[in-house]
Image (tube, rainbow, N blue to C red; front, side, top):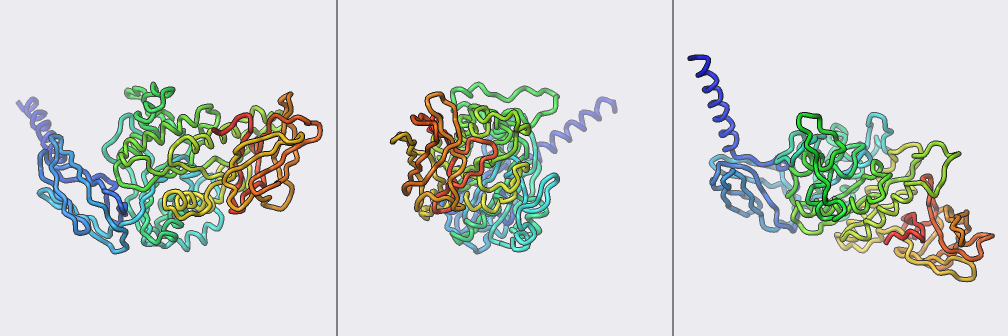
Length: 485
């Protein structure tokens, strides 16, 4: 009798505990003390309660009520909120009460990608700290900037909630350093906070060495015909690799989708450098995130990966076959083809071409902030790098027009322009002279090429050219016979 009754009683107890756990009032981990809620937007609040139970949410003078569905899931939206430095309390009631304190209202941004987004200000195993790390950390006490970090996890299917994370904290040197928070995201957030004078919430979710496909939801792949058949494999009992499609999205993005934010920042690409369709994969990522967030075409700003000595044996190096500049063109193409996006150029921000983790993350954050201030917040600041916009042949010279000259093209160091090459009818590129001949015009020529047909610029993994605009932003790499459009 005992041998048959005990398992039944144990099973009953387990089921009772599971039902009880499901019946409790809960909110996802992204909600917590010290968080920032997005201003000027209807803010979703969601969670779980007893099936059919009434749920009431109170915040900033608003009281909203809904009912949990048959599975216990509930969701409602607060009315648009005004930015506020005054700490407020969010109260959720459904038979019991959940209270979240010290909440501010301002601007919320998500940062994701691989190791250059993950890189903290201070020490990271195998990496050098960012420039002026000690001073930057010592100065990083901003209680009205709040940080949240998603820890590394994988999942074969979308999760309803995070399993590992560091909850919302007021930004301080200790908070940044103890969880190794993203330097690029912090520097971006600091500039937004300073320029807009509003609270800022920063959500960091990245993983070094990862490809773009694991971060992309199924609906994103489905939005691009050539990628529509991309699916998550059936892993069975096997270990889930962090290279498989959707597995990082499932564990590290899906649980926070719906949390109101202004936009997203993306710093990734080194692991996809050999791809020939990265622009399409970017479309899948951006389309997918926008779809699952259901906020429309929110801003999505990203970083062009930096020069790096990928090909070590330079004696056998052939620039025509270098995948890095072709990858740069794909990233630039994505910034033109995907609505409400922008790209930071980084060719000047590398102090060591043998270090794949450039240390100047303050400038990365600054340039991302320029894009947001200009395009999202309409502050009309120069934010875009010079980009090739057309070529004509005049008297044996190639005359190139650029957009985004922002005050005129310049040689940053005052020296002759570097990293220009020109080709004639034979298609062979040779080093060329280049001169700025107008606010947005560069003339390119070379002895022996009387009838040029193409020009390329910074077409090399090591290229750190000196063509800039007057706003201090470096020109995008390009070739005229492989346009970014």
